[in-house]
Length: 318
Length: 306
Image (cartoon, rainbow over all chains, first blue to last red; front, side):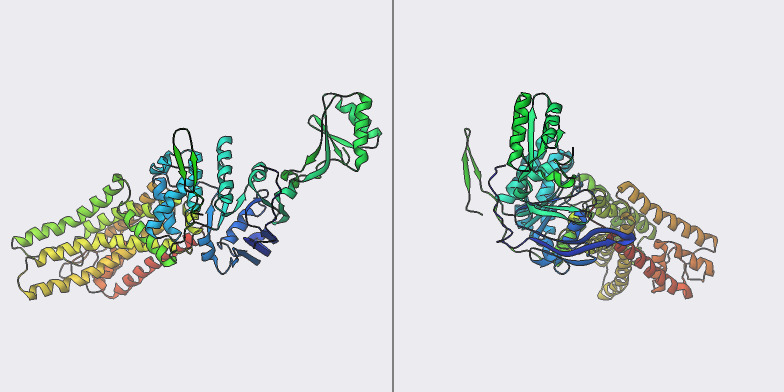
């Protein structure tokens, strides 16, 4: 991924998904969503959060399959509680779990679901062939799904979400069960659909590296509420943490730094130092020079999405 | 989007990537989608659009069901009259064949989708939650109707082509129409019962077993009860004891026959003329139908995305 700044689309374009004070409480006192207010900008948005954070409840409410206890949700400018059928016409959904019958061909299956999306018979056949081609299934599409590899099955699941030409795709853990090469291919495909095809995508995933790789925006949920929603660039912006990597003498360096009033914490083969001001650089330089240590690397760390779910990442008391 | 046709020239040839094209044709509404699911399900009830193996049971049961009508047509052509009544057809054969058909094909319509967890893919599309069971029920009722009514139609046609005179044809027609109505009752009840039992499990073998056991067990029980409590009475319609008249209520198959007698069917059947108990058969029919349809609706009302 390039590091060109992502243009902030949220300010100019209408949000594809908006929720206001959205809450869902199930009987027996389980709160799945707790007054969530968030907007999803056009483009590819990562929906992240631990199990039980409310991701799947949010998707169900957006598709109009579960009524919220209170609050409002709108998708593509339509109220999810009122206009659910229209929303489901314009939205493609790819479930996380296996949802394919083994004894029909990919073509037959996607064609049937195209008809279930409201396409006339001929259009359903054409769109099914096109969708399968776009996800990279060619001759295989005439074989029974039961003979497919996991990667091919994931592609069929994506094709059935794409067949109705949606404005928005909701992808639930699209890389589940794939090997690293399959993951890469699936992520490239999603990035291509979001970019070239001009379809907005919400990808739910617990693999934050994947989210970082393809998403323009991130919405992080925690215990049914909003942890943070922002552009990917601001998530991964430069942090106030300096990584110092030396070949040897890590412990001596830490001791020397603390003498100079700089606290640090080991992280693998590096020391992480909180960047208070420019004088921190001087202190580090002097400490290393004083100990005559071989310096390998000195860089300001970029934030990673996964730090959201950790305690305060670095610096402070070691 | 159609404009950005990219042409990539490789060493071996030229790949034309026509890119993604948005769909701007018509989008059909919910009614059309349900209709499409109805046709899809009706075809799959007879194994159409599926492999050769899926057609074995439907074709075989249909063929066996038509056999008496064909034999009757041959007999009528040789000068004999109609020997099979329209209102019962060949009761034991019809009951047996329909139970086999329903047990084998109801799981084809609903258990397969449960087994492979396809339901979320329907729910996320522009249909309502109960549209799916509605389309399945309509399709399977139609399938059962074809199984029951086409043999009756053959029976009628086979008799009529050999009949002489309009009055003979008219009397055949007057007997035929009530027979068709009884066939509707069969289709409506058997389809509902078969689908609700099949929707309880994604395993076809279990579903088939459950349906067959339910029908055959209750049917056998009803036959035994009718037998020990005085038998089905004489063909002349001598009154059977009350216990025998009520025993048919325990099985859907005999309930169908009780309703037939209650509605005025005259042919001799396995259930004694119910007399004053006839209304109970009508009520039992409605109760079984309502319970099956209610169960089917409840089963799909709570279906979720996972």
